[in-house]
Length: 631
Image (tube, rainbow, N blue to C red; front, side, top):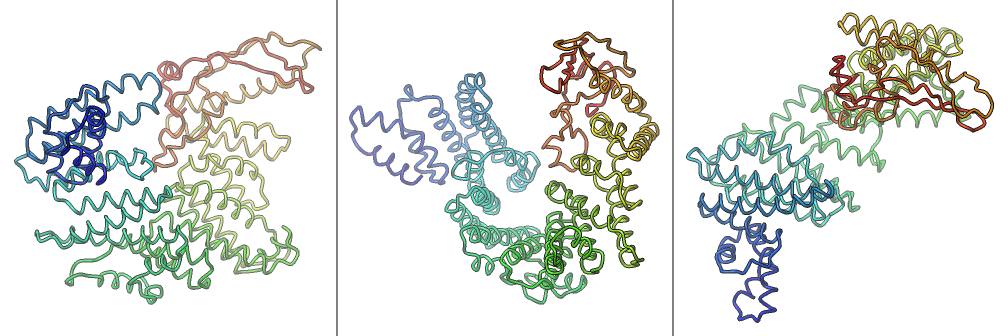
């Protein structure tokens, strides 16, 4: 940025010929952007106030010049010129957006970000010209959900930054808010580190640390909460810097950074002693220097590195995880990684005690070794707790939880093993508790694993499997019906009976909820499945490629059923990032109106049948039948 600005300044002081003048006009927009981003307002003043020929500039160049004039006007407190600058900038963006929108969203995205940027500049400019306390109003806005959510939705460029963050940095400097500036630099550093831009990350984190230090030592009177925020942010900068060092292979440096000022005695403290220690981390005797959350993040990160490097014993690592959970008992990531570590201890013990290395030997070790049983219980407990608190590790935690539970409770002891039976009962008690607390759409993702174990050696385990399936079917009858329905037609009589109980149980729940439409659909699904099975078993005459069939009348109507296609039966990725379980499936899925009476016979050896359906838009089906959007 400095080099661009210096080049533009140098050229402005020389007598240029026509060709050099054209080049000077080309770099003018970039020089203008560099000036306001660097906070060099005197240079920006000369750039935007000099006479320039802008007739040959493209829309992007004119946008940069208009934005530069807007930022200059905010700095000079000229509200009328701010309005004019924003108007000109928007016109430049809209002229480009109108053509880009015809092509694709990807081409439109940069222009949409520019409109977001201008909206933020417009609002914050009003803060500068407000008669209210500017500092309080500015802080109130940057603490709003609108400010935070916008940064979550944008994509950083190859420098780990983007236009919105760059503009926020300039406005923060203009408002003399070093703490906010530091937070933005910290975000840039975090994004750059995750993107592998390590040099950019190091520079950004250094800028963040300097900004927070300036905020901490500023002469203006500040309250205790502000000092706490700044000190906690400095701790976050150190954490990000340690992660950066670890990413480039400097593990020892990373560990020294992250464990700085954490005494070894903290890992031996009970809850009361730990609370006392945290309360003593004070400045002037009454202000905490670091929050429990930041301290727990530092300890957990260093613990993960110690585990991967094998640098501590099992007891020391467990003490560290226990300390993290005392500091942050509702942290999903901590529970998941602790459960994962306990599972690794279980596998290590299996390897040490299992001579044959096969499944029979593994089950024998699990049957007779109390440590293995305790490890299984503890690991399942933490995996389940992590799923209660969040869904980030769903596809790692849930399959392992179910596999460990089903394996452990499948052991049958020839002689009465009181310890084994007690631990199996405790395991089933845990799972029953999780079945009530873990959202149903998480269990939906593991339906194949659950359906394969509806018949189990342990009666209590079989009851818990049926309980989970009943809950999922009652919550999402339109989707879960297709997975659970085929169980009713299994060759195993036991599975038929279990499936019937699951459907009856789900219908009973729906009836209590007053959802007669979905209850009736589950009841009618048997008719639909019988129809499909009949078609599959139909033997067409040789060389026939199609046959006419009589399509039965379904009650409720066929459009009440979710079509059995992958897009309709898959949980949307966005639903797994939210704690709410509403609308976890695509809301707009075409519904089946009726089946095509012409059945296609495919000319392969097995002669599969191809059944097609006529569809109606989901909005029409929902409007006519008052269906919920998730079926």
